[in-house]
Length: 507
Length: 125
Ligand SMILES: Cc1cc2nc3c(=O)[nH]c(=O)nc-3n(C[C@H](O)[C@H](O)[C@H](O)COP(=O)(O)OP(=O)(O)OC[C@H]3O[C@@H](n4cnc5c(N)ncnc54)[C@H](O)[C@@H]3O)c2cc1C
Image (tube, rainbow over all chains, first blue to last red):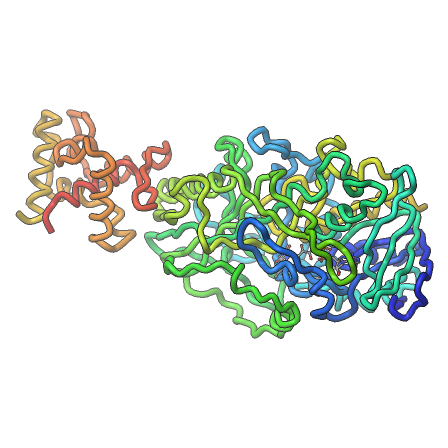
């Protein structure tokens, strides 16, 4: 069922069992999971059904410390959220990503990979992926042309990815949500404040505002914040009338530990002779799509005390003109969405001929860092909410990990007699300097991190905000660490786990 | 002096250093010392020579053909007549396996092949 909040009388009280704030990847997967529950679910979406400049302007903020994508277009403020222009690369986190690693300060999830596996399998379906199979042996068995490089399997392995069509959640799940009698979707219902009880131990209600300034009140038994990692933190910090530091922020953690994935060309590999590369090549459209990137085994990360990362092969040598996407990504979200949603022409089914020289594209985990954070700006948006600014900060471990990865790859390529690796200059020069062509993955994580101890995390293992009985967070904001892979498959899995947990609360 | 002649002289020097005439056999074995496998991979002799020059700058104590040749073949006095090529290839592989690598202009190279590059770079073009 759909209600445009702009059509309601000002001051309308909206009530239900469960309220989900934000209809993006996390919020829509959860709502879909409740369609047959018989419970009244309120799904509040700040935007409408299309991307609009006026709504995106509410997302404007500054990157204060280093270049980044324009914040007004890096995430999307409409039904479907940022899946309106995501690329669909999916892979689960590795078991080591969940562990406490003594060389990675603040690492360790309170849940393990096996605990998340059943939810990953469900998330795979929501994102229209193939079978929940990320073991390279499975893919090799199904295609005789798919062969891994003969590298030492105790050091490097092919980390598998699958590719979502990519699922535009706002398109694929619009009808099922609108047709579900128990899901009450309110568009243009932008939450501007979460109002706690007097004692700040539970949520009393929400203030939702339409773009034309009408304010409505929303009450539910349980609340889930699913606005993306930047805007989850923003909303908690801005809800500071009763809790002066912001909700869930007694220990000054909300907004801190912002993490991205480093995406950067870092090296080139020269093979002595061409190798079959189908396993590592971006697959053609129109079938279950999977490919591998090189990754280091957990034990090797442990031995060298480095972060997790992967490397993809891009055909052809370094050009010296490698470019960052930060500058080229448009601030015009409507144009971006149009371009990214345009039908793609299939590149055919055969991979390009194997080459002897490849550029290596790194995706790497960023170490959790309390100084890397989302902060409230003194400036307010059109609806009177403080804007969110970004302070994206790195640690020496971030860069050292990329360098060690390629040094190890260089050794292993030589040992296996396959070829040689050249690290780019920026990688060899110290641990602080980063190249102009550094990009990120548009992956926002960590701003309401998960930890059993309220002094070390904003939410507990059930994604509940510490100290507040009925407020939960969904999305990559809860990640204590981000692993090497893109976040959406995992955040949908974690949201579905939360969904199961809430069933017991709303029974 | 041509690069090839120079290599032979360097190898002879190495033989002297190792103290045995059995150290080097066929001329092709001798040439192997200053012919890193890297040439087959990078396919650019100037580039490989440049790496060699960088090695000599980085390790000035080895900026000398005799020293380099000795460092490559080691002190094994009783080296068999078997292919030096195969022996060096195996040594390169073991260097990589044991992390005996040097990074020159970003290239991760086995210590042995870096010295081979240096030896190559010492010969006039
Ligand atoms: C160009 C691009 C490419 C990407 N490619 C990949 C990829 O290949 N693989 C991958 O895993 N990830 C990718 N991502 C990231 C992916 O899009 C996000 O991880 C994912 O969309 C996050 O889901 P979410 O539900 O947490 O947030 P979002 O999808 O951003 O949804 C948040 C929702 O909350 C709503 N909202 C916000 N504030 C309020 C409020 N105050 N009140 C009410 N509603 C509100 C928003 O309108 C939105 O609908 C990409 C992102 C971009 C930009």
